Image (cartoon, rainbow, N blue to C red):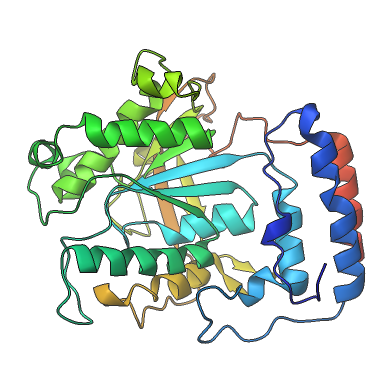
Length: 349
């Protein structure tokens, strides 16, 4: 099994909630208990200058074990959609993936080929490769899976209509998004942007417009039927949220504009920092965009999202708010799993 410093991600379990998968799920519990008993009292090494293929300190030893146990306590799956690398809400992704154990995927439409490069003269395809690698390095800190579409960043676009025209029609990226939804099968779909003029960049607007359409299209077997013939099944996510409803990266918001408020400024003792700070360490790897020295201060770091489509009964309170993306969604694994996880957590304390 390796030493206490061995990465634990190889033992992670894809918690899709069926009792048919219970035996394979339970198989990880003895591993967790064994690691807990042998790693007590150990702490993670410092996180400076970690090579890409080397696990982060938070993913090894006791911190890594505790995060794997969090993943065993939920079957929740969330997918966030953005236009370019560095558009992502890293604090929210880290809060969901690392703080709550949610299986989380970031879908980035382009690889940022049309942006600027503060590290040198390489642009276009070369820059796209560089920004892809930078984003994958960031994803390690967020704790998320990553997918891309086929479309390219062709530079600044004034409107979503221009964007779709240069992408060869809106069905090109939509098909890619639907394919990822049908493959990953999220409970919650989140657009980072709103799909309105408030997003500015046409790519940003397009990403949210596509996300709104994909929410229903992925469940329709008549949309992109070639995917169904390949063996994929239709999938209906349960809830759809949009972001940028209060100004990009705004820390305050009028009550009527949001449904869910998430504070990534909360300190997680397992990580040794807040979710926003963990995400900032990840974003700092996107050096070509000038984020190399990016840091966030302690304190609240709020993100606001608005529920715009759902297949569930009303999940809002009297003033139109929810406590969490997964309100109204059953994400509890079988009771036996929770009982065994509790024993593993006790052993790890």
